[in-house]
Image (cartoon, rainbow, N blue to C red; front, side, top):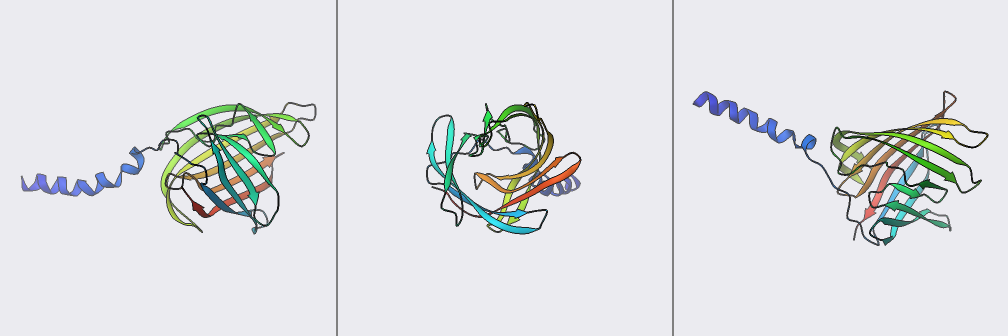
Length: 211
């Protein structure tokens, strides 16, 4: 009996170390006035160059609308997302019906595929995205706003233009979504075309305010 008790006692810490892989989180309950700001770093130049700010201006049954601006610039735009933070209209482009970057409820090991059409507002050109997503870990991540428990989501997006001058590109994105923040706290995006890295963007949460 003493030996059995000792085995059970030794197993208890292990049992309590596992919930990160068993738990899941549903889509966030957001409100008008919620705000986030991120520091952008140009990964190719290793330079911090701007601060992106988003604050929610409207929440409906199907959509979230947020004002998007760059600190120090006078202009702003409105971005539209699904209630799961999947982009529909991101100021410079529109996805049809949307781009499924997150698939709630999030849980380690979850995988999904998606396709979406994209139109650039600047020239009206169209492209198609083929997306593969996977939640690969639940871990702590440290950014300027603090240390957070976050789901690490890996996305691979293959894109091809559907116009005459079609280009083919590939994007790899790592997305740390923190349930306590209701958004991503860090994002790394690497874009390749013709076998070369064309851009690398890193966003880290600076501060946030939830209603």
